[in-house]
Length: 307
Image 1 (cartoon, rainbow, N blue to C red):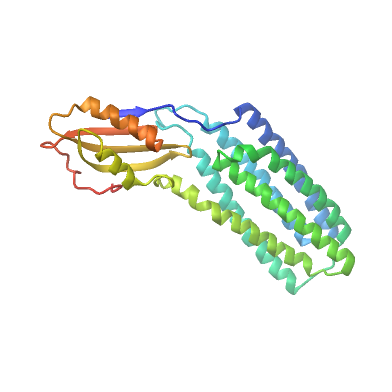
Image 2 (image 1 turned 135 degrees about the vertical axis):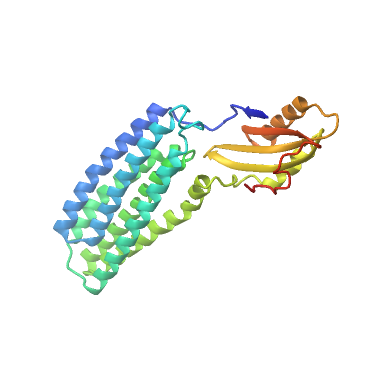
């Protein structure tokens, strides 16, 4: 059996310590903002402001989860986790998106209930606090934007903040309409719109996280194309019992049984296959079992990807 794990990653990562400092600072900002929004929402009687505060609290929680996951993900592989701890970031992303969905459904329910029983709110308090919230949300999003490009964990936290910034804009609009026209029904309507926006973001990002956790094939690699390329290599007769999956967000793996042509050199074929898989498909972690035509394993008739 042959195994290859090339260090071929080319993703541009921010220095871990610098990234941790950004996330920690963002957590502090969001916690302070949450307190301010809840107090302001109570005094103003605004459901949309309290809704924005709850979303901000979920932002802070998401950042705490993301921060912890980043720390754990950097641990080296050990006897308990032989592939390392990198997948914890996908678990953190799943927790954050699930939290977003729960928050969105709750806000939607409260918004609908308030439409049927509208209450008077103080528009100018809403506008002032939502304006401060918008500035902090945009600042927090800026702190995590560059890191979100290479981490679904940080991307989940970033989308929390981006959605909250959009929510703050909506709250400002609602407060302005209340000041100018006394349209108190706008407050719960904005709450519903915030909930719908949050829900859309969370649901659209979940499939990618689930694909990783379910050990699905990388979205940009076709398993049939990989098998075809392997079979085209000199010295290879057929390939079977192929498994292609995402080990971590930026690290894919493959294992397969390779049936050698007569007189083929197993070591030479294995080396060529490892190089081809790495260069053509970016498969940095490949495990190949070489077999002779007369000594096939019991799994020789299995189709691509079948366990």
